[in-house]
Image (cartoon, rainbow, N blue to C red; front, side, top):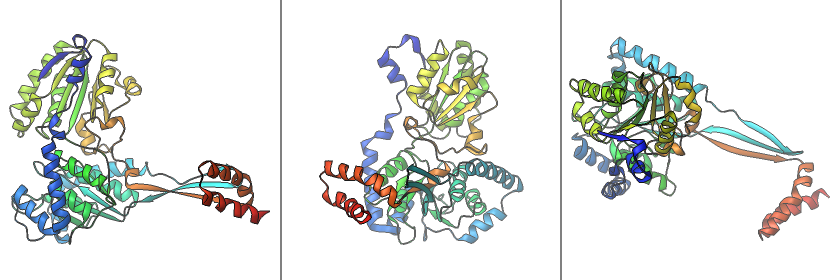
Length: 432
């Protein structure tokens, strides 16, 4: 991990300190993903099965998971695990139901009525990573708000293990969330299948879910495909930034940093701290907690690229946060609530010593599918509205046409679009 002093750095050094790993922009990744997308588009199921054998080491005869397997997985889940899924689902559902949009109607001028009507998308492709860890929580974070929004068909794509099966906890969660369409495929080939459709996997209207650099690249390509699906947001490797002062608990901070570092060797974690004593304590705690962490090798690789930045003021912290735009922002400072209004760019914020990032990942109710790589400057995390779109409706009365029509005629003349003008003029003549 690099230890840096914000006050000792010039602008160039500060930009370098907040730079993301370059691998996500690797042209080689985009080239390989483009080949996969092309192969799946033309080869359908066979291409997906071939890539699943190549990348996941699973020789499959079919991509669809039988519904009976989902039901059996739920029945076989320990009661404590069922209770955890039930609690998480209930909290996620409650928070996302509160986000349901309402239709609006405005009379912009007498006789001119404009409405906006929300509608759910029809088919949502929900990508659930499962390569190095079976992300049951991601399934909940996508499946629950999709159902709340009223999505007609929810499609799960998730990679199998080398045994040719999907983790039973993922299948159990799918069953509890009322999903019947689960397909065994991961990586760029799964995104390609959801983009173009195959003999087995339906083409989707929008694709959701986090993933590695290959999945992120595939989603970006899918969004550029003419007539292709929309995507939820740009999302790559996980990242977290912790703000800490002299009273912060080094053990808590280390655990928050490692909870993101264990996701992926490409994950980026950063500590922004106003106390050298606390910073040294965090370094010691990181080493101590790594000693018995099951995914220590992954976490250690990520921590080697981490940044510990010493600052002299809360204003420095705010400057760094807004420049970096972190996916997760964990605030371990005195009076943490007062900093929130100054944070312009962050995916999700966790306030105070008793709010680890893990609660948002699993069960507090907020969504953990969040923008990474600085995309929090322009994107929100997944919400109920992410699964919806809006239709505008307008209706004019005769008086409304008389009042508005002449302005429309003049605007059409300015643009030299005679047919547009005529569509109004004929009606005004009929009214006169």
